[in-house]
Image (tube, rainbow, N blue to C red):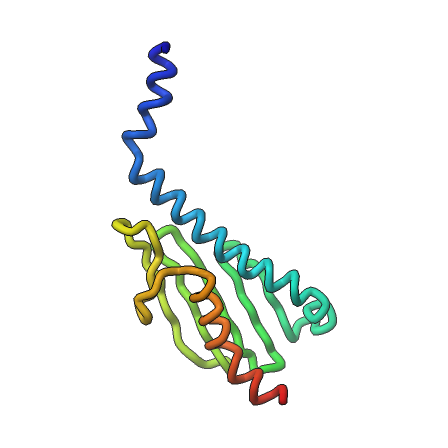
Length: 139
């Protein structure tokens, strides 16, 4: 084995933690992307006819789900490397949550619920933003 090959093999070991962190953060962004892309796909027909009254859109650093017909109820996620900010706004008012990246576990955890980021948590946020407004409007 040439030193070049040895160097290529050993250099990543110098940055194992940084590489693992980068991969975990990318996986979290992919989870969020997949969740909202799936919503867009499954609700495509509704989004087309609702026009500006119902949006699911990527913002470059996250996603927004806005249902103006439900008094501007919305869910917003904005991610950075070390944190994800979440706004849960049923009827346009609500609360924020922040998920911080924990280096020791290589996962994002909520400050409010102390739960890791996963599809179940994203579904929980969606429910908090829209369940009650939908139930009181669509009967």
